[in-house]
Length: 189
Image (cartoon, rainbow, N blue to C red; front, side, top):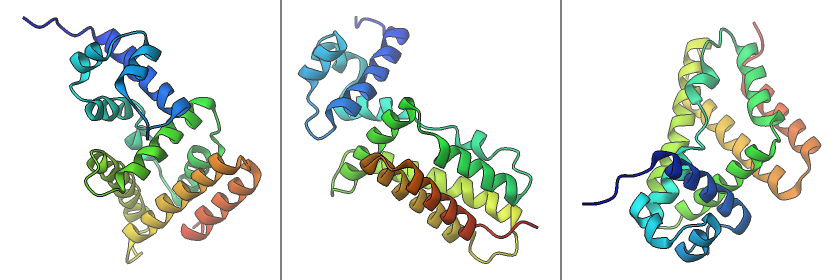
């Protein structure tokens, strides 16, 4: 009979997977060095997660932001503007940098045909775009294409976040993100 999973240990391992990928990268991810880093064996990683890909997707799921919470109770465009700036522009904590670095690696690998991460990455983008589209549709019902507006914001901010990680130029990138958000959202009413 298989040994039952220790959920606390599983959560600890998932956190360690994110830290490992942030430090060493996704491209060369191999179970043995990862297991050594985590203080376990590759056999135990398979026991907990099945495959390397399933393990990574489970780890990424722990990093997914609370999208519903981000856009909950947004009464007007100005609040949305402030929330987008605060959530995507101002945040430069080490936790943010770690999870964002990992996400960008997964998005890059997901663009390769046949990638085991393609569905996860597509879902991550879709969830963000749909959540923002719903808010824009509610706050600006006369706009003919809120999904395109949401796509510009999500994709533009994602590109700017990548720029920040690559260059470290927080000031320039924050100004650019504010410009993108302010020019894409309708003026205050």
